[in-house]
Length: 223
Length: 213
Image 1 (cartoon, rainbow over the protein chains, first blue to last red):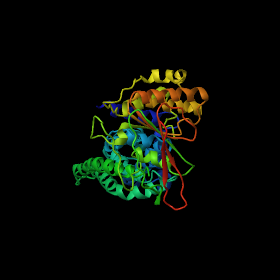
Image 2 (cartoon, each protein chain N blue to C red):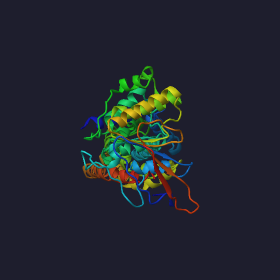
Image 3 (cartoon, rainbow over the protein chains, first blue to last red):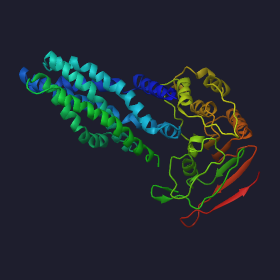
Image 4 (tube, chains in turn blue, yellow):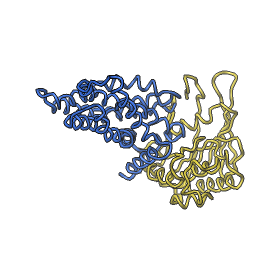
């Protein structure tokens, strides 16, 4: 019963990490975005430390969006999407597994890279820990919500930009609570746990809404 | 059946019994592929329905009893031939039916059988068009499903592979399977029903159905 889930997950991971996969592109883009910020903002270390978590989050959001348009389009281009639809497996679960594998290949490297890049932005050790933790909890939600946009634009040749326009408004709550949780960890009176738990809740909600909405869009995509 | 807001065909009724191949012919653009995609459950019919009688699991849809062998090979260039095949084996749910028996092969056997055993460890990106086609065909041999929907099954195959494909299709039919194939080339199969789609002067496409089996 669970055999097909494992093999789908392994397949997606293999495709992402092998030649031509999009695994590392996101991290490189994240690195590029975050490392130019100190040059743009200037040498004010306190200012950098204050806005650092926000820029790490925005960088992670953009880097996540970068690879998402291929989530289903690659399968559509070679006809595999038709077979995924015909395989007799629950499509919602297929989408969820694909999202998890995609997150493992593109989102998790961002989380791992975040502490290193946080040093560029003069974050305190507490802030580095907090921003990494919020990214770990929040980036799956970005992938899962992005899956909705990816499946809506799967039939379009160059749907990447449209997907970003569709998805970015939906990710705003995640961005708000992710950044406010990371900020709350360093500014004393505000509790860290409240925005962090809301962020966790948002991720859980998107783990339900994302696959269902995405599967619905995919069923209509093959016309 | 509608596609892109345009009625492709209407009033089409046919039935295919076990062990029979339905060969769909007709000029380009008449709707052969659309018919197959409708049967595959990929396009919803505007009206009407599809039924499969005698299925062991009535809760499974018709398309879950079918293999779709279309124009595209559904192969990932980064994965080896064997990885591509084993994925589809574990991912596609088998659809056993009482009146249908087939020799299910292991992925390696299927590759050997189709004469591409030596490519098992090669990334699919390095395969030629015919080899990719055969690798895609191997998918039909590793998961037992009684209904084969084939869109131009012989394209890109050499004469030897084409003969082997016809053997496979005849085996499938003699095991109680059903084949619905859209093709332009004559297929030498044991039991054939023909369905000829023709464009009409009016927007609605009438059709003539002749039997020679």
